[in-house]
Amino acid sequence: MTNKSFESARIAVVSGGRSTERERSLMSGRAAWESLERQGYTTRFLDASDQQFADDVRGADVVFLAIAGQYAEDGKLQGLLESLNIPYTGSGVTASAIGMHKTLAKTVAAGAGVAVLPTVTIPARDRETITQVITSTIPFPLILKPLSEGGSIGMTVCHDTAQLAAALRTLDPGAGWFTEPFTTGVPVSCGILEVDGSPMALPPLATIPTGAEFYDYNTKRDKTKYRYQCPADLSSSTLDAITTAALTAHDALGCTGYSRSDFIVTPDGRPLWLEINTLPGLSHTGNLATMAAAAGIDYDHLIRMILTTAHASEGYRP
Image (cartoon, rainbow, N blue to C red; front, side):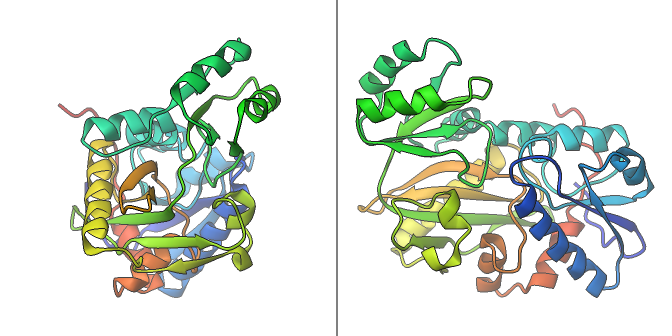
């Protein structure tokens, strides 16, 4: 890990892409690009879905990744940048790939002592049989989730066997899916930001949905349907448990630069780790920026701090 200011560097802000999170990525990318421009850096905005992207990115000294989803947050883009020997922000290839695969990420986090929910992976074939396996392992209500999507895309809550069977019939057979218990509680996020190479936990943020069963894709995109609470109004012991788990997951998955872990906090105050975002959204009013502000870090300072964590190559580690 190198810590540089990149004051004279040519910085490519890479955003867009072709995942289902393209619009969220563009929002983050424009905000980060405008911040770097405002601070006097030499920048260029690149859309990873453009046909000439691979040629254009070669002209950069460092890449600021403001992009999410498949082909972006899953290690593929990071691998391209490493093959071109261009430093980039965010985690390396391995951490990105593991973090994007939700059940694998949970296995790694659980191995490090982080509390997670039980899961059942759903095979592409024989979904009639898997219904029996799921119902014998996961109690109702349960939730179906894509293995490698973000932003709560594609999630379905099932309250009984009939709903589960119907939902399984509609799943894209080419995509990976899993299920876990649908647990009521408070959705909480905790950002991690590396300062001089040392991970620092930001104040946990609670998201309170208003009128929705859970913090789903549609709720996330309608600010009238939720409100933020940062720091989260939880006991000091629960907040400590959240920050400890977020730091542990960040380290266990090998994340670098920054990350954001998502939790559900049960009514008795127990945080259960759901997933990690290796490239959290960077809009002005998003989770990470809100948590940074609560820690006294304004938006431009946040973007500058992320830039200084850019690293050249994951390489091979003993």
